[in-house]
Length: 97
Image (cartoon, rainbow, N blue to C red; front, side, top):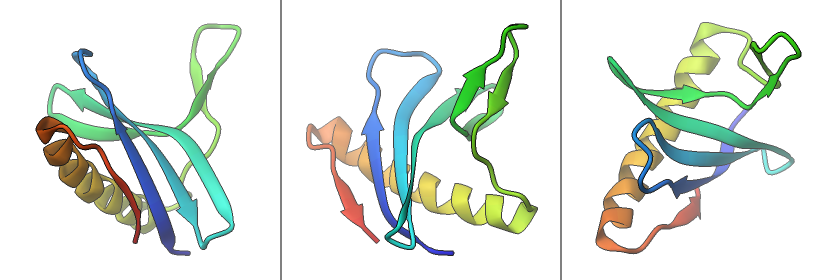
């Protein structure tokens, strides 16, 4: 599995939510609404989730193993840092990788 495209949409004015992320896997599968969140110990990636009737959230998609999660987080965070830098200059971007 390879991430073939990433779109990072920075969020301005929110204390915790810093960006929405869409990724394309192998040019044939899309995952939308991932989030970059600023937590108490740094940034992390939140998977798309659905709110359940009891008020808890359940991930709609997620990696099944630690190496896949780490690869996904590394690639998304690298792109987030690049886009955040450009966003602060006034030009958000997305690109195929």
